[in-house]
Image (cartoon, rainbow, N blue to C red):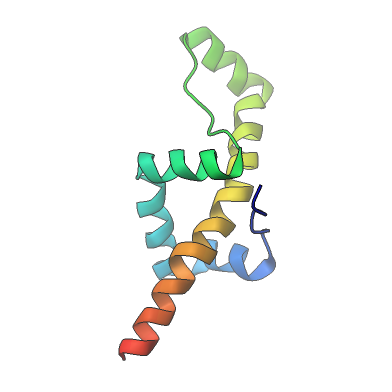
Length: 96
Protein backbone atom coordinates (compact mmCIF):
# COMPACT_ATOMS: atom_id res chain seq x y z
CA UNK A 1 0.00 0.00 0.00
CA UNK A 2 1.19 3.51 -0.81
CA UNK A 3 1.96 5.83 2.09
CA UNK A 4 -0.65 8.46 2.74
CA UNK A 5 0.72 12.00 3.00
CA UNK A 6 0.81 13.29 6.55
CA UNK A 7 -0.90 16.44 7.78
CA UNK A 8 1.78 18.96 8.68
CA UNK A 9 1.64 22.60 9.82
CA UNK A 10 2.03 23.97 6.27
CA UNK A 11 -0.84 21.90 4.91
CA UNK A 12 -3.03 22.81 7.88
CA UNK A 13 -2.20 26.49 7.35
CA UNK A 14 -3.00 26.26 3.64
CA UNK A 15 -6.29 24.49 4.35
CA UNK A 16 -7.36 27.41 6.54
CA UNK A 17 -5.73 30.49 4.98
CA UNK A 18 -4.81 29.72 1.37
CA UNK A 19 -7.77 30.56 -0.85
CA UNK A 20 -6.30 28.76 -3.88
CA UNK A 21 -5.77 25.53 -1.96
CA UNK A 22 -9.22 25.79 -0.40
CA UNK A 23 -10.70 26.05 -3.90
CA UNK A 24 -8.75 23.00 -5.08
CA UNK A 25 -9.84 21.12 -1.95
CA UNK A 26 -13.48 22.11 -2.48
CA UNK A 27 -13.41 20.92 -6.09
CA UNK A 28 -11.74 17.66 -5.03
CA UNK A 29 -14.34 17.00 -2.34
CA UNK A 30 -17.11 17.55 -4.87
CA UNK A 31 -15.67 14.91 -7.24
CA UNK A 32 -17.11 11.57 -6.05
CA UNK A 33 -15.04 9.52 -8.51
CA UNK A 34 -11.84 11.17 -7.27
CA UNK A 35 -12.77 10.36 -3.67
CA UNK A 36 -13.68 6.78 -4.57
CA UNK A 37 -10.32 6.27 -6.29
CA UNK A 38 -8.47 7.81 -3.34
CA UNK A 39 -10.24 5.42 -0.96
CA UNK A 40 -9.53 2.46 -3.22
CA UNK A 41 -5.81 3.23 -3.56
CA UNK A 42 -5.21 4.02 0.11
CA UNK A 43 -7.65 1.51 1.62
CA UNK A 44 -9.60 4.07 3.61
CA UNK A 45 -13.30 4.69 3.85
CA UNK A 46 -15.35 7.80 3.26
CA UNK A 47 -18.10 8.06 5.86
CA UNK A 48 -21.32 6.98 4.22
CA UNK A 49 -24.81 8.20 4.94
CA UNK A 50 -26.65 5.99 7.38
CA UNK A 51 -29.69 3.98 6.35
CA UNK A 52 -31.99 5.73 8.79
CA UNK A 53 -32.34 9.16 10.34
CA UNK A 54 -32.16 7.58 13.80
CA UNK A 55 -28.72 6.12 13.06
CA UNK A 56 -27.57 9.53 11.79
CA UNK A 57 -28.77 11.23 14.97
CA UNK A 58 -27.08 8.64 17.20
CA UNK A 59 -23.80 9.07 15.32
CA UNK A 60 -24.00 12.84 15.66
CA UNK A 61 -24.93 12.69 19.33
CA UNK A 62 -22.05 10.37 20.18
CA UNK A 63 -19.52 12.19 18.01
CA UNK A 64 -18.89 9.02 16.03
CA UNK A 65 -19.76 10.64 12.70
CA UNK A 66 -17.43 13.59 13.33
CA UNK A 67 -14.65 11.17 14.26
CA UNK A 68 -15.13 9.32 10.96
CA UNK A 69 -14.91 12.57 8.96
CA UNK A 70 -11.89 13.73 10.96
CA UNK A 71 -10.06 10.49 10.16
CA UNK A 72 -10.98 10.72 6.47
CA UNK A 73 -9.89 14.36 6.12
CA UNK A 74 -6.67 13.74 8.06
CA UNK A 75 -5.68 11.57 5.07
CA UNK A 76 -7.52 13.27 2.22
CA UNK A 77 -6.41 16.88 2.74
CA UNK A 78 -2.64 16.14 2.63
CA UNK A 79 -3.23 13.88 -0.39
CA UNK A 80 -4.97 16.67 -2.32
CA UNK A 81 -2.21 19.08 -1.28
CA UNK A 82 0.54 16.79 -2.57
CA UNK A 83 -0.97 15.33 -5.74
CA UNK A 84 -3.30 18.08 -6.96
CA UNK A 85 -2.38 21.46 -5.50
CA UNK A 86 1.44 21.30 -5.56
CA UNK A 87 1.62 20.05 -9.18
CA UNK A 88 -0.76 22.86 -10.18
CA UNK A 89 1.54 25.39 -8.53
CA UNK A 90 4.53 23.96 -10.38
CA UNK A 91 2.65 24.09 -13.67
CA UNK A 92 1.65 27.72 -13.08
CA UNK A 93 5.24 28.63 -12.12
CA UNK A 94 6.61 26.95 -15.27
CA UNK A 95 4.10 28.73 -17.51
CA UNK A 96 4.57 32.14 -15.92
